Length: 492
Image (cartoon, rainbow, N blue to C red; front, side):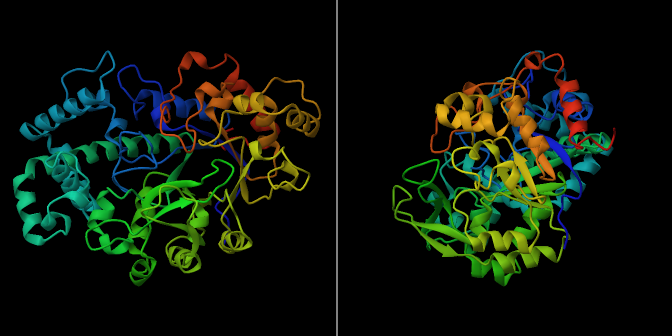
């Protein structure tokens, strides 16, 4: 079994929601996404890394989604919907989230009244191919709408327990609304597939992201209750999180339901295989968030308010990745191996030759044995200046004690360039086969532009950039560094 990283390359981390778009409340798969791919290609990058793209809740967190398969409808470019004749005109100003939904409803009405033969054939083919998850998701959304957005475990008993007679009645009552959610996901998939094709034409590979756990109030848990650690009423018995660590003194209580691993193993992990297969229709590699949870996970009693009183519980990681290896060789997976990592976690990662993550912002606060220092990186790994959970590199550096700033500068031989370029150059120079730079770092932005602060619920996931923020020479500067460190795109 080989590593999925078979040559030196580099990429940029930017979630599509952070793309600028004058006609949308949210970055999307429209013209700015294509322009960003052009930037990556011209600058010598080979990868575009994104976060999970599922529907989000009121927090906008990509890691709390109502589906592990569905796409966020806010990524649908309404102007591209207009181009295929389902809306009258292109938007000239930003629509609100509510208006965005209303315009998709309008497009659905047009589609129902006078669909072209080609679009109708595409739609029906999509619904047939994605039936294994799409029917359940669409029903979940429609039923939830008619129960004041209450979580599924507070629905009437027959619907909560998915009694066939209750489901048949709901399907008949909400037939058109269910069909709308099929239509919405078709538009999402249609645009995502087109964008993925364009990226490949420009020699840009997309790295997707899969959260190890799913939200309790999700179509997946409602439809597959036996695969999760729930009681008879659908309530969680234990929930996921992590113990106290670098980010939080009380740990993090995520609240996601834990898996019923024996039940999953009894199906040869079919649901997980479907999940990985689904995302690989759109991306080339998948970063699995919280990889260590496949070796052991932090189990917290559902009634606990913090993560402090949890405990580690073993997971069947070896059997799980052996099952995935039946379908993929090499496994197209990057392991997010951060946090409390034990020799057992490292052994699981290395057994399946999964590249791990090297975060340079973690490297300079100890001694020469710090595993994140570039001289300790391994070839089969991905070097990052920081991730979506970190401060921007400029914000990070400005917040460091003077002693750590001194360590940083001495290690990098007293760089004369202003931050964050020394840490960017260090990532690109690393022995790691792949180097990923958050776009905020390429724009030299400070702490006000970070994407997420773990353990907080306010002000996250909102950052968007503006094309005017790009320095005039940014493309040439990146291209030069990618060439100098042998990370140039194959198109060069």
